[in-house]
Image 1 (cartoon, rainbow, N blue to C red):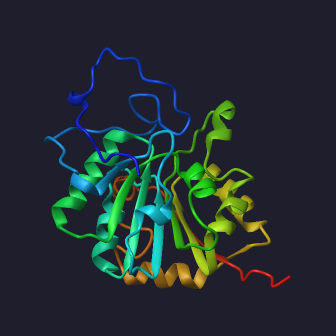
Image 2 (cartoon, rainbow, N blue to C red; image 1 turned 180 degrees about the vertical axis):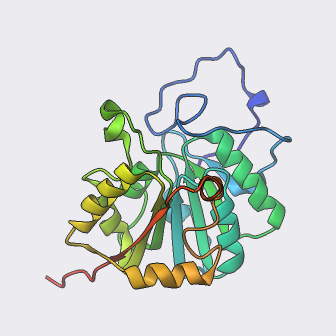
Image 3 (cartoon, rainbow, N blue to C red; image 1 turned 30 degrees about the horizontal axis):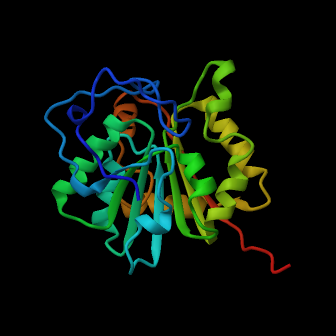
Length: 247
């Protein structure tokens, strides 16, 4: 396993950073900002993935029948809430921006709960090469970066390869749970996931999850709170993984 979080002060600021395609290279992601209120102390709730990140099996302690992943947890509001609401489920948040992951992990450490963790890595790559088949009860993707410029749309999470990657790691009758405020991206998500032979939208389950309240699905996130205040329309989807063929 790669080393846990270490303070930026422990490395030379002048040392060049080697390129790692798994890690976010810039100072911040588009559509994201962060205010540093205090010194982070994530303890062992944060793992820096590096060039060869640990597998999901290496990260999840024994004894958890259900494992869920959130892609792009930002400041960690959903994962922190979910660890409280689902104590028998292990929650892994995969965040590309180290600063956000550190803040989120600090908030989780402060709760004292041990059924969650944050990892700095590329979420789609992690699903593709570090997660065993049918290992997940759910994958959560809330307010993913819409990358609105046409030349950047290939960077979106929900491109044509997403259903195949998700179908491999989500167990039968598990879910991919999605929320977005971007109408254009919502259309792409509905098309990409809706045309997959491995998934079926479950609108009844969407309403059931919303009725259960924060920490189960869709809510809370910092983006949701902001967009609700702005009066934006939020589109939510629950795509159920259809049973695998015995053939």
